[in-house]
Length: 209
Image (cartoon, rainbow, N blue to C red; front, side, top):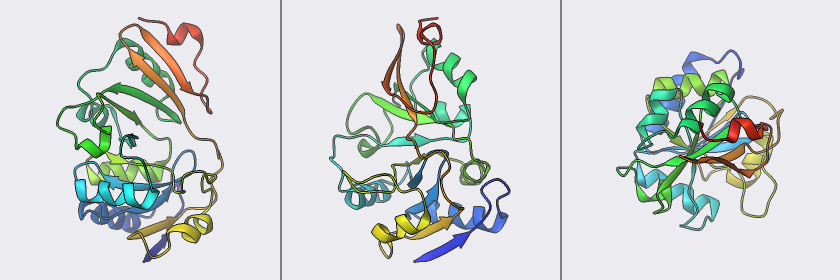
């Protein structure tokens, strides 16, 4: 298994390109996100998504959180954006806020777990944004841990579980946030916080617009 190192704030272009190539080829990459370390796979590669399910020992009915580099990427995985989603995203993205939105019907079943929605965010880490822009697509990004175990906050914790089982790992130092993202379910009638995290929208921000 390949291990690369780079500064998450000033990413090495060669690392960015290498990660993008691995994702395009259907590989799984471990990398630090804006919360904890995660496992990335292309949403356009059902084979990679199935590998994620197996690696995470994940129930097939549990959807993945998706990462996109910008609003264009978000729209590529959603059917439409409720007004509260546009408002919350404009306020808190890029950053650790995940929005549950109506999903694009063309997405693989592994992404939505056969449900009608997707969970997506624009991360606040220059390394990740650079990779997503180079890759030109969205990725599934579950945390790099097994069920019931605490999220991985360092590359050492990732490798203790997934060494030799994934295609590439990027060491960009310890995760500083260490809290999973806030999750808000967005509908035409407003937003509902499903998981409390680093971002705390106000009741006014969650109200229908």
